[in-house]
Length: 227
Image (cartoon, rainbow, N blue to C red):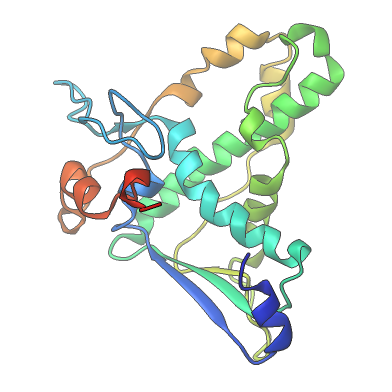
């Protein structure tokens, strides 16, 4: 956001933010932690049946949505077109991140949209507020729609995408089916939703390294920032 004015007065300025997702896993896709917050480091929650390969979808979304929402908000904040690009790199296993986007981010977004519509239709079934309050503003939905709409589209040679990526971002889910499946749900049902609590990852490629090693090497901790 702080570079918006520089972009306005320097029309030839081009900013690219490159994120190699396999290195940013600790900040983007949290494994299950005993003590978990975006700036919190805890021990991996490992059991004999999942070997630490489960992640909590809601926390995974919190990590990646920070980057997506920041990017999608820039035009409305005054950033000139063609001046900024968020680049998401899925190497060395692009299929792995396609699975993450399809089975976690897009499913999570479908649940958000369904909860928003049901709260409008049946507010008496909720305890004063819809679930997923962190994402009710719709910015994540807008960013994911941008990814899907721009997949496999040939941009003009003079056009600079707002978000670029080298893996398939997945296919949108049927929101109406989510609404019908959850038509009678109350707040406690949303809180117990299994798809919100756990998703089992397939084995990460060896080049990713161990979760805990990546965490200690690349995790952004608030206490590292000096006042």
